[in-house]
Every structure is written in C-alpha cells, then in structure tokens.
Image (cartoon, rainbow, N blue to C red; front, side, top):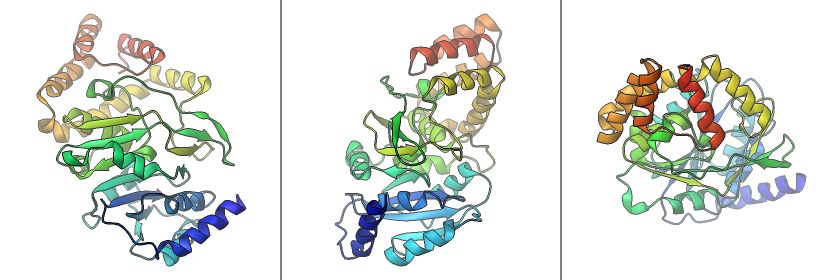
Length: 328
C-alpha cells in the first residue's frame, strides 16, 4: 500500500504538467463525511485515470475528522482548478449528491458520482465515456457497472451480483441495478435530476437516476465488467447485497414494509417529472400506482400488465411475495 501511495504522489506532482486534450469534460462529484481512513486511496485512483479531462467537486457534509485536511492537501497539489471543495447541505448523502447535481457553477459534459472509500480502476472514466454514444447528447444517458468487492484492507472478496436482463423502467420501478459509485451521466440526464422537487425524500440517488433516465426514454448501459473496487466495511451506508445473509436480511425487511416505503418515496420523486415520461411508461406508472392501492387479484393483474421484473430468479420470487402481501 505504501508503494501505491508513493506512485500516486509522484503522479499527483506531475499531473499539472500533463496537457489536457480537448475531450469531453467530466465533473467527478465526490461526497465526503468523516472519510479519512480511505479517502486518499479514492483520490489517488482519480489521479491514475487514463482519461485526463476531469475536475473533482468534493462536497463535505460536516466532517469532524481529517477529511477536510486531506482534501485541502490534494487541492494544494492539484490546484483549485482540478479540485474544488464545497460545503454540503448536511441532510444526508442523497441530498449531498443532489446538491452537486443542482449546483449551477458545475459545468461539464459528463458527471461521475463517487463515494469516498472506493478505488477506481484506471480505465473507469475512459470505459464509461466510450460506452455512451456522444452523438446522442440530447438523449438522457446513464452508464453503470458491476463492482469488485474488497475488504477494509483492499483485498478482493468477491463481486456484486451479475445482472443480464435489459435495463428498463419496468425493472427500475422495483429494483436499483447498480451503485452510484459506478455511474456516469450526461447533461441531459443531469437536467432530468434537476427537475426533481427539492422537497422529495430521496431513497438513493443511483436508484433515482435509473428511474428517471429509463422512464424518460433515455439510454442505460449496464457494464458486466467491474470498474472499481467497492470497499465493504462497517461504515458503508448501503452494502453490496452480494451474500446470502444480506439477501435474507433484506427479504425480511421487505416483509416489514421497508420496500413499500421506498417505493412510495420513489413515486413521490417521479411525480416531479411525470410529463417527461414516455407514453408507454406514463401508462405503466399509472397502472403500477393503481395496483398498489388494489385488492389481491387486481393487484396481480395490474402488476403483470406493467411488466415489472427484477434481474434474477430469486429477485422475482421475492417480488411476487411482496405483491402478494401488498409490500411493494
């Protein structure tokens, strides 16, 4: 790890001497809160990116550890034109990310969400941008990927679930397929996110982005190749849901009503952009909302009509159970 940091430090010191080619600009939207144990690894992985035209916008949500000091140290090395430090709204990680999405002073062609404790693979940005067609800049577009799971020391311990079904609004209504830490969106997708009411309660900004882009006829790319190391530790706000224990835990919580609460909050957020949905998805949303208020037989009929699905067999079984118990 020490050799890695030394190499990263050398890269940092020479970064300003590397000319930035005229390519699409990427705003890396980094949210921090008491992240000093792993933040340097995350920042170093930005510096090692083979794609160079980026600027980091770090929104700190009131850290009381050395997070701000670390950010300031890297800012002094990179320059304020490569790393901008902002104050977060202190209303949770979802609101913090949306504060960056809504910040009018942040201008770029693409926007990459980042956690504070992951390690990006060197080709993450290059791969993300190459996956989105630059000729369709007016179409909301979102890239996301699988992740490699690592422990608190950075040792690989597995992978996030592999999904093979086509990303779609029918899936997004009942499932979020990838973490925000893997996501890259274009300006058209950002504008959709900016339309969401500031009063809406955000379950997770990654799920919100997936709902908006897929619902409004946008382009969603799910890459089966991992693009980062997703660190698993006690400080994770949302885990990877990769092992059986976590899946059983989430299934139990679903039966206690957590999924239903999440769905209600997602629908509240969608209410802000209903008129931007495609015609088919607008009707699908109406049927979905009506199904949640209906009796058992009508609920199943309407849910079948919407075509909602999850990515795995286990997921679809749990979905059927949720529909049966009116917990969706």
